[in-house]
Every structure is written in structure tokens, then in C-alpha cells.
Length: 111
Image 1: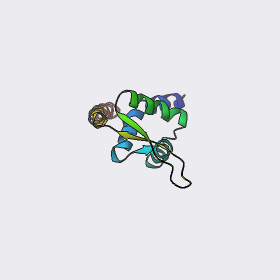
Image 2: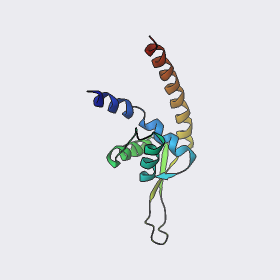
Image 3: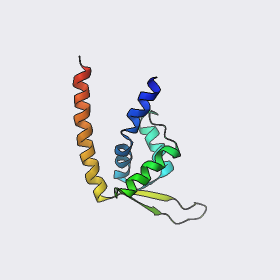
């Protein structure tokens, strides 16, 4: 039963977390998955099938852009995702909403 609720809560914050990870630098999909796993203490263990629809939606909304890297030596070309200026502004708004929600939840849970 708790798995269902955990998945719902995680799904609700994925856009914000992906944008936050892209704020520092452009990243490719596997890099985002690894960084999310490491920084969350393995709370967020994303699969490709979860991450890529998020990236495509963010790209459709103009919040990220993607670019292919050139193959260098044995390295294969990779598709990098980069946050746009609109994405940075949207992230700031989402973070404000997240803070208000977190504060409200904290007040309710104190009882």
C-alpha cells in the first residue's frame, strides 16, 4: 500500500528535480539518473522509461533544449539536455510553490 503513495509523491516532484539538476550544467539522460540516485541517497531510482517522458515534456514546454554531442574517439554521441531561461524562471516558481506546500504539510504533521 505505501509503495503506491510513495510513487505518487515522487512523480509529483520529478519536473522540479530534473530542472534543478540541469540548472548547474547540461547533462545527458544516464547522468541525470545517476546524479538523482546519488544526491537523493537512493530515494529516487529512476529508469529510462520514467525519465525520458519527463525530459520530452519539459522540452515540449520550452523549459529545456536538447543537443547532440559529437563523437570523440571511442565516445558515442550523447543527447544533452540544458535548461532554458524560461526553465530557470519556471523552476524558481516551482520552488516557491514547493516551499509553501512543504511548510503547510509541516504544520499539519505537527499535530
